[in-house]
Length: 94
Image (cartoon, rainbow, N blue to C red; front, side):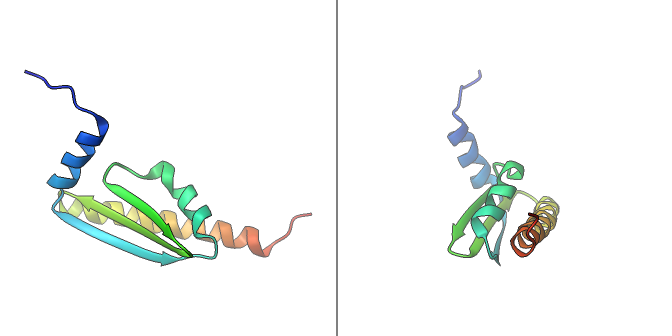
């Protein structure tokens, strides 16, 4: 027997099944733009919230290895997005 389930129900199950969680708090000159750059790569196991100039990304995964991989990818993406935002803010190409 199969049961049709909504995306929200599947996401709730994924969060409930996740036993490992990491919260990354990073500060940025333009946190909204960095968050927008990261959102396309976010999975159902991730949540990103902007609090002023701070970006809070919470990752929940079922395994430590999965959590580590997702956090590693997120840190690289944060670094690149922040560098691009910083470069565009400090250089004028007129």
